[in-house]
Amino acid sequence: MLIDTFGRKFNYLRLSITDVCNFRCNYCLPDGYDCDQERNFLTLNEIETLVTAFAQLGIKKIRITGGEPGLRKDLTDIISLCSQTPGIEKVALTTNGFNLARNATAWKAAGLNAINVSADSLDPRMFSAITGNQNLTDILHGVDVAQEAGIESLKLNAVLLKQFNYSQLQDYLDWIKDRNLTIRFIELMKTGDNQSFFRQNHVSGQEIKSLLLQQGWQQKLKHKLDGPAQEFFHPNSTGRIGLIMPYGKDFCDTCNRLRMSAIGKLHLCLFAEAGNNIRPWLTASDVEGCKQIIIDTLFDKKVAHQLQQGFVGGTKHLAMLGG
Image (cartoon, rainbow, N blue to C red; front, top):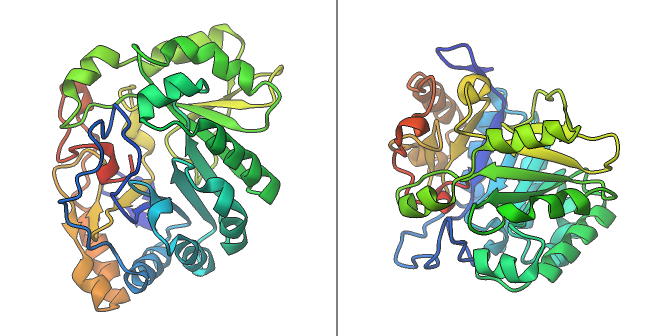
């Protein structure tokens, strides 16, 4: 088991396989992806070494992220590799859903257990205003296809923005009343590129939580492999609500996840200064060496991020490391 100097146990890896994204979300990549960046992403063989090493160190859950992971043609192979690695109990995917309808069945067959789909509005015009994409209907159809394929856990992610979708909060609650899935509201985070936008659009997660509790929503207990979201249920709703509140008190106390960038850097926090390059061990297929560098790096993990103080580290935008 991976344990840091503060006694926190790590069983969850967020694995970015590309930082390329085909959406232009106003809170992340409003000008689109910069094609001049390095694109020498981890190969399938390097990912195999990485996943094997982490699994042998006690990682039980892997979430495949981007950028947009669906842009990689070998995504199905990556899912299969992760699901077949001894020790890995759950494989999840975060996607914008642009090709979900076409691939959900194959991803399920490869071993995918859970999908989180970005849906920053249920209104097509607002969705387009936020994401620069006009295919909301196709994306929601993909969610239906994923459910029909038997994906165990389906969640929609929405970054709540004061000047955009915050007024549509009740629309989400109404939409999930008869749907067996979870809507997760994510508190907007400040990054290197969005500081003015953050000041204009940040909504406190605690404010949303108070509203839910007033409406009779009740908080669920966490499973050991769950991420940072607080999840809520209501006796009159089939669907559930999740809240991710990185500015909340004690958010980092239960941290159980590490992050790998698409170019082979191990990040101890989304908002740390820089990752530790472990790619030489991955390229050499050196599982034991990889395990040792992971253990050594973990000693540097800090007790908490410093978002409340305005520190965003080396995170220029969320697509760099999968949010």
